[in-house]
Image (cartoon, rainbow, N blue to C red; front, side, top):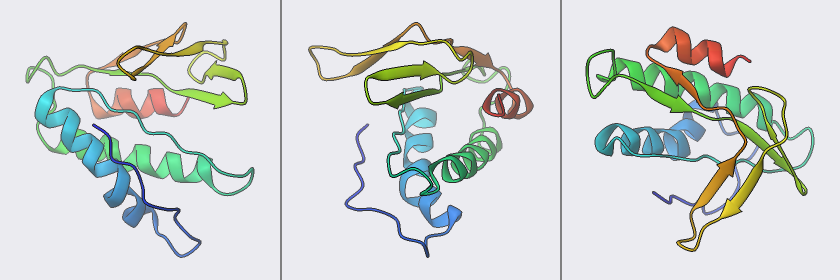
Length: 131
């Protein structure tokens, strides 16, 4: 699912408004179709990306596990990857190891060399996202 933002979020944007605009549609997509979702954030150093991503992760975790994704339903397992792409370098944020991004012929991106954490409940997801 592609839901490009039509602009940037300013200093007055709240974590809830940002999640409602970009995080919630991705979570709904994953839950409805057992699909995949990717959230890219970019901006200047010190502009709040890390804080905002942490807030989005917290809300997504609560959203996912409060709406029926639990052990026993649709397998109950999520697969999570977290990477940072900076310039030509790509790092797996779960392990600290370099990985690589490749664009497929379909236009989709594939990550190689990054760990995929398997989580079955909200506590496991939050633990992975705190790494």
